[in-house]
Length: 265
Image (tube, rainbow, N blue to C red; front, side, top):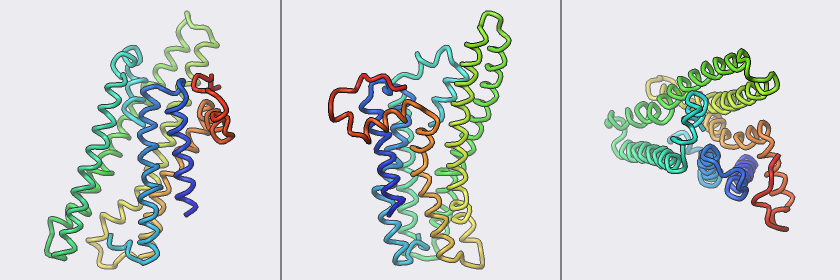
């Protein structure tokens, strides 16, 4: 229950901040908004069902391309990554996730009806589903992040060597790039750390002679779900404008006047 409340409140703060403050109305932050909505739905919908399943012991049966373009193609980023492109990216992301989830859901229903005879449903539920919903996206994200890291390092060295740039300007740009790269690495790393044990367990479970104990499987599932709680804390820790927005919302200051155009430090 505590995880659910923290997840809902934290991601609700992200959603209000991006929607309310004009300074945060950027394509990048709209993708963060999409992630916050997904995490919010986890807190509202998935957590209560997971609590019910855990209580009844039934559980056993059961933010990246834009950063790449901003770092690797900085001169064309603002012209090509506009609001229309971001909307399309968000729709594709949610649509592909929905299709994958629907396929896994129906495979699970058919598996309950025909038991072990439905090999194709077992394959979809425990192998194909995880491949498209976790393993393949993780591989793509890791490849993209590696390219981001290498390009960011190259750009930082180029800026430092450019004689027309002052030391202060070069240091500032390099610092901002390092912060963005570090934040992305933490978000991605925490996601992989929290979700990998669950998917590995779910993948090998059908081929194991010894069944996974229910408490172990439930623990891995809750570890994975708790990832939705952490992103707001990561953004608040690394970005001062989100901290400022959170303070204004929590204190109720936004209800005392129009602060939509406030300068968030």
